Amino acid sequence: MFKELDPLLHSQLRLQVMSLLVGVESAEFTYLLEETGATRGNLSVQITKLKDAGYINVNKSFRNNYPLTTCKITPKGVEVFEKYVEALQDYLNMDKKSSTQ
Image (cartoon, rainbow, N blue to C red; front, top):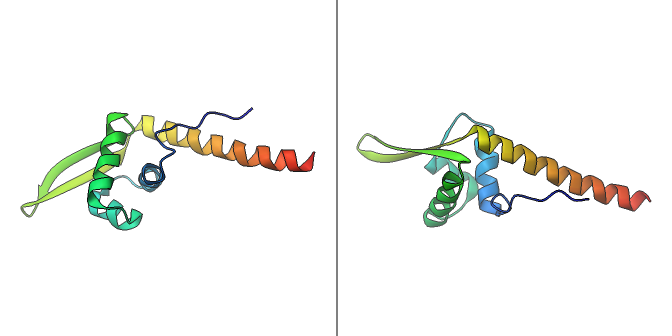
């Protein structure tokens, strides 16, 4: 039986953001923008969706009079990301099991 995949993480861009954040303490918006290749508007929308779900925290401040947005994954975000990866691994293992039978 396949585990259900979190629909919020099933979006490619949101999954990219979570994958980047799970490996760092925090990341600036510009770093996420560069790493994902997304547009500012699309990245901003997807970050808001992750924040609203409680998967990430977003801190807005200023550095040298320029806006600075920093994102950090929450404990809930780590948990749902790990469950998502685990579910994907089950999907891959199911495929291997069915091909050997």
